[in-house]
Length: 101
Image 1 (cartoon, rainbow, N blue to C red):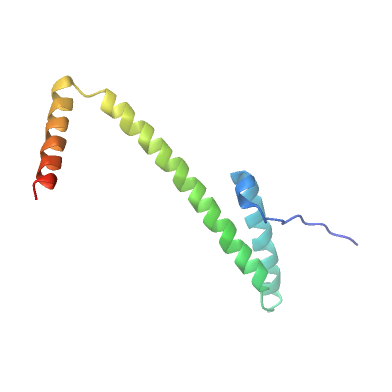
Image 2 (cartoon, one colour):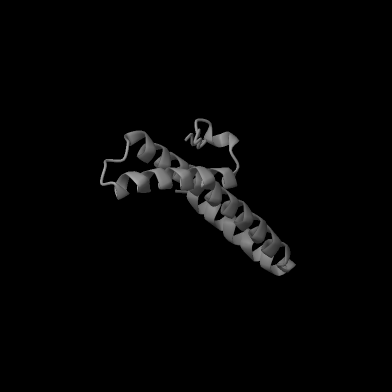
């Protein structure tokens, strides 16, 4: 019997998030197999799982940051002229105070 599981995750940046989740799931299956037999999990499995998890976390965080920036810009566009003037005056005062220290 031959089983082929593709878990090559050498170039994490080139993979889509969905592919990263699949790679992480495959690594977790391998880890679970070793643990189920009460054998030590190979170091490369735990190392790769950590790398893949970190990449997933970074990608999700980047997407959330991007969405937050868009939401803030949209909210800023809804402000009245007076609100924008007040914000600009506060920023000017803050910058002047920092420069006059």
